[in-house]
Length: 623
Image 1 (cartoon, rainbow, N blue to C red):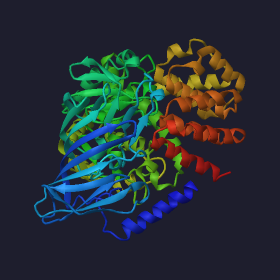
Image 2 (cartoon, rainbow, N blue to C red; image 1 turned 180 degrees about the vertical axis):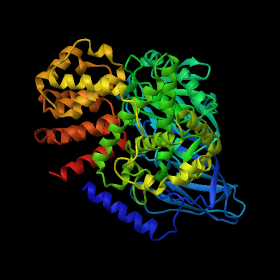
Image 3 (cartoon, rainbow, N blue to C red; image 1 turned 60 degrees about the vertical axis):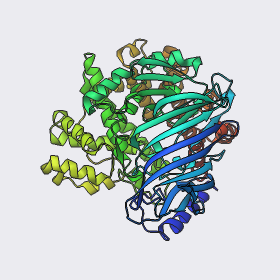
């Protein structure tokens, strides 16, 4: 049924959008930024967590790109629009039919003098970009908790907007909440006040951003300063733990500035969300969201913070024009993330380039898994995808991250190494800062700087080839070889108590992954691994994830309960989807696994539950 529905959505989209309308700048948006663009937004919203809705109005300042344009089309999804006005006059508007996951076009007839419209609305309790947690789903157990997740096309369920990364706007907001709750946003806080017995929090984002980076959290949260420009937010029950884990954030930020240039956003705050958050992190400006699965106790998983910090330049400052060019956000960010980690390693007397190579090789393994899941001939394994009629969430994988990184590393090797490429990367960021660009913009800029190399490359092949990349730079394998040697011994049952002393935390994770990939599943060896190292009771989510997968593939019945516990206590899709996929292939437990998912479906964020449902449908179609 899910497959049929998804296919029907694609067909409807093509009929409604493709056949009956001219081609738009963004295939995932109903808006036409070639005619009118948003210059600024002001949100005046009241958060009703009991009803699970936001209500109020959005003031949208517009600029006509096409002189005389009289029709403004915004993206909306399940919004209850009550009225739209401009300069005190009511405007005519219509909400079109819903098109699959894309929502509905909101078409507004402007007055000739209209340069601003006010849309009065409220969100739906089932808004795809909003999750409201019940008190029992929080650490404090006292109050509900609301957070938004707007990437890729969920901002339209939170506010009427041009929901495309090709349009950037500044914004302000006034968010009213019930005391003692606190509101924070992807903006700089201006003030908070008590009004009519409620708390009103005011925010301002002076740097233009796309709608998907507008973020809001309302909850019983508190904060601790890490440095004058960095603080961490969480529930008070684990704020001390969060501060300890992320106390080096400003050092990471400084390392990023040394590579990419000045940090222009003012504040850099981290917010540790409840465990249902579906991603490792989300790069909302001034307020990065992170998953509590990063709380390993030893700072070994803070590379995710380096990634989100890197987005401050690649993604938030230089942005893909639409989701078909997502690699410009994520490939560049992985590249910058690993530059940062390498620089930090070098500052501690280690070989940063060896670490960068090690991360690159581990990334290739993740890329290979994504391609296996999609199928090597799937066009979604290309760098520059075609998303006409396809929900960008369905295209999400490690492909734009790792394949994009691999291309950039290959280009670095062609032009003479990082000493040559580093200044180019910094100039690229300066050139396209505050803009939204496409792949051709990068190609043109690269070719301008390195004409001999740029003109020799078959760029069409690089962007459109499916499967694993045909050209991969030579990487230093020393750190990976250490992992391979240990993994080979573990698989054969030769396990030494001091094995972990020789490896870094990331190497331990990689060695365990290599055992999973080896398909050598002798249960006596697996039990000895656990008895020696306690992998099954680790505080490191990356280890628990691989330990579950290893035992599932070994068909160890005793792992089913702890594996299901792991995927129902946190909703990070990186862990949840692969473990569900593995369990669904285990015939005797398939029905139990599906029933468990249905029981806990309400725990997951809408994005995660939708994707797991599609994974279940795909597996059932093979049975």
